[in-house]
Figure (cartoon, helix red, strand yellow):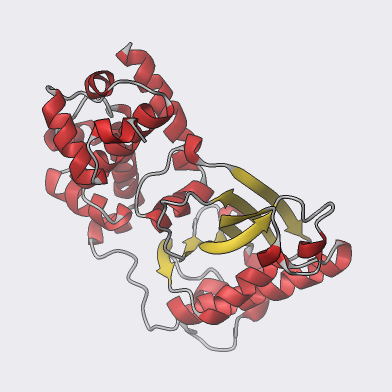
Length: 330
């Protein structure tokens, strides 16, 4: 039974770890998100010729979710494989309204009056924009010998990949809302998308790259891609052992990295400690098993590897503020 449980849980999170949409959702929610929790409202994947490849994914917002508007800029550089270089902007925002009938018969929303629409639902919106080196180079001032950090990024002469969070200013939010709510189609839509993504690129570069140096990581050993991969692998192993707790010592051996480096690297890359991440994953999955699957407290406690129901109940209440039995009666 446990083996089947591990395979099921891992299959969910394998997609999760590879899906940038859910990665930034987890960052915005500050907690793990299960695929089964997401109700998809709208999905758009498009490519504006010679400009940007973008995706917009809109989900129904759970009333109990607290989502912090979040942005991320990811610069990917491969010295020996330039064709794989790219710059990506990702945003997650909440508080917008989505109408299920806007594209068909909703006169309220067609008139941009979605707040009065009976079909409206509050949404969580995830947007991703990927720019190629060829497109970005047109904006760089190449006359300078060294150039600014912005120029180095735009021309892909900055030799270290990095990921940074972005503060979302009012102008950034306005551009995002315009992308979510416009009514342009065909060629005019391409022109509009191109204009709005350039605005997002401008403010993103201004927020995060207007500095003299980009220190990708506080932990210098993380500049080594092989060591970063070990930290990411450790996260995957934790997910595989969601019902069979693993010690940090055993985890460090599995990924062949010093325990101290593992703990520091994990905190820097994922923004949380190994213990807090693991406990968060266990408790979020416990909620899913209790509330959605209807399993008993005893069954869930056993599946998650707890030696006693009382230990599980204590951990669950610390994470959620509720006893497991209180969730069952809701």
